[in-house]
Image (cartoon, rainbow, N blue to C red):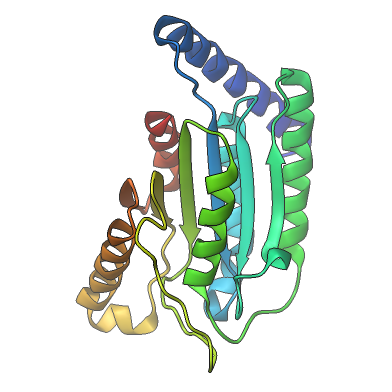
Length: 228
């Protein structure tokens, strides 16, 4: 999809969703802005998924974002609880024309991120989640969502310690996206399902408002709209 085609789709989709949100907002007085935190794994074999993840975000997330929405992108690597792991943090301008320009800039940033070479030796998923929850907690939004693109196999370096405090993920809807199956999962599918169930328990135990694993990325725009 060319930048021009993407811009046209983003503009038409955003306009339709904005109109729907404004109509409902006028009716009940609620705010409908949404903050989306995206965690992208760059360790091991998942590093090969960066281009696909970027395509999913450009196709299923950016076009549906409305003025006032926020996108935060965090890299999952060997030590993810670092401010330097933030790849992008943008709140869309209330003016639709300016918001569309910001979306185009985000699309270019995602392309540049996907093109970066190298992988990390370890996988600090929870560190990225903790960082993301802190930033989401500072954003004034009616809906806060965390999208996790990973195989969900945490592998911390020696000396690293991660703990989920009570209420860590209060009010956050956590969505596991495009979860890559490990080679061992093919031999025993229950290992894959058990990994998902383990993370679901951790997130809900930390106060998350909900958990869902989505395998078909085309379902994401509808799910995000339902969470507003």
